[in-house]
Length: 115
Length: 109
Image (cartoon, rainbow over all chains, first blue to last red; front, side):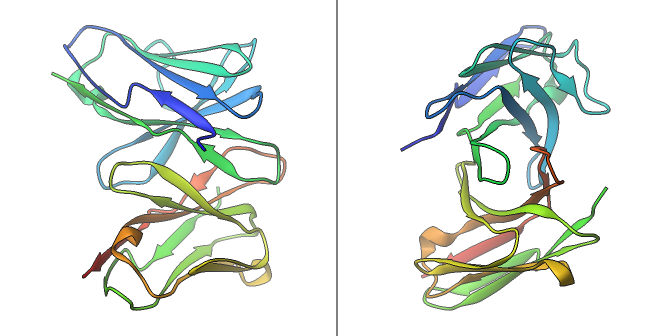
C-alpha cells in the first residue's frame, strides 16, 4: 500500500490566489519531509526540507515567502503556494524516508496550473 | 556537488526486449536509488542499491561504487514499463536526493 499520500493530485487556480498541498506519511512518523518541483520533461529539483516543529530549510533560489511550508505533526507537511502566478505552474512532489540508508518514498504528486 | 549522468536519454523498445540503463557519477555516492515515474507522475522506488546487485522480478540493478556507476536491467519489457527512470543519490548522512535527468522508456506492443 501507499506509504505517502499527497493531496490534491491536480489543482487549477487563478493568479493571485493561494494553494495548499498536503503530504501525509501513512506508515511511519517523519520528522523530515522533502518537497520537490518538476518541470515538464525535466528532472526533480529539491525545493525545501520540511522539519517537524521548526522552520523549513529552503534550497538556493527558492522563495520562502512564496512557498510556505508547515510541518505541524510527525505525519503531515503542507506546502502553500502563495499569490500564485502562471510561472508557478508545475508538478510538486513530496518525499519521506523511512530512515537513513533506506529507500525514499514519494507522494503521487500535485499538478498545479495557474491561470 | 556530485554530477549524475544518465544514459540513454530516450529508449524505444519492442515488447519483450531487454534493456540496460546506466547512471554515472562524478564522485563516490551513497544511498543510490532507482525510481520509475509512470505517465501519471507517480515515482516508485525500484531499488535502494548503494553497492552490489539486487533483483526484483524482471528488474535487476548493479552498482559498482568504486567505478562510480550503476546499471538497471529490464528484461522481457512490457508496455507498463514505459515511463521515465531516474537514478538518485544522497551524500553520507543526508536525506537530500539529487537526481539524474532520467531515461524516458517507451515500450511498444
